[in-house]
Length: 39
Image (tube, rainbow, N blue to C red; front, side, top):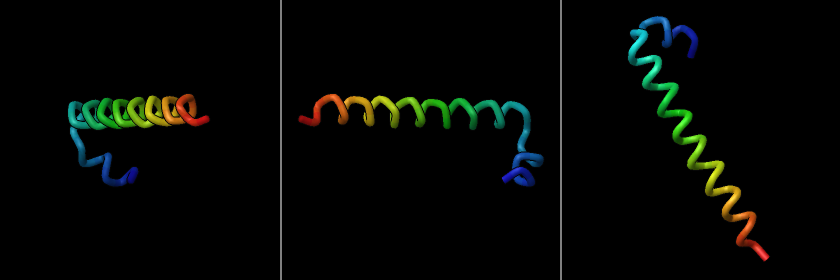
C-alpha cells in the first residue's frame, strides 16, 4: 500500500483520502442508525 502511494500524485492522494473518509462516514452513519433502530 505504501509503495503504491508513492506513484500517486498529490492530488490523487488527497482525492483518495477524501473518498475513504466519505465511505467511512457513510458506514458509521449506517452502523449508528442500525444500532438505534434495533430493539
